Image (cartoon, rainbow, N blue to C red; front, side, top):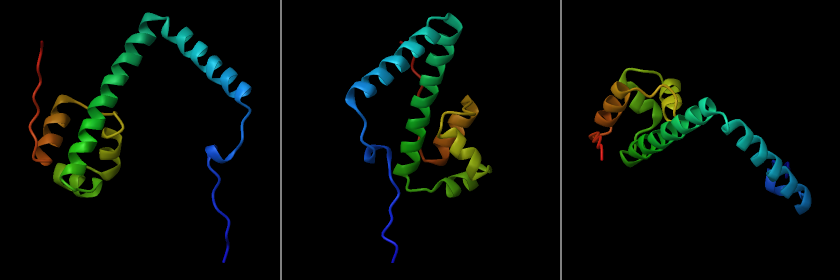
Length: 111
């Protein structure tokens, strides 16, 4: 029997000083990119899409449906449903259809 296992990122030792430098460089690069208003708007919009995607994913899990089962109810492919749950291809129509297929309702509130 082969006792080999896949190594993950946490299995590799990394010098803490190097780690701090890498994190600082990543933050610096992100801040530089987000200093442009058009990049900031895109970043903020994606964040909102990810929030909606997480809500949809949780709704599907609560109904104990697989992606394949829900995709059949929505007359779409499992791969398209996976993209929706990753924050891609989310339209209002998709949102309402997805919620209905999970036995949920969508409530949009402006305050």
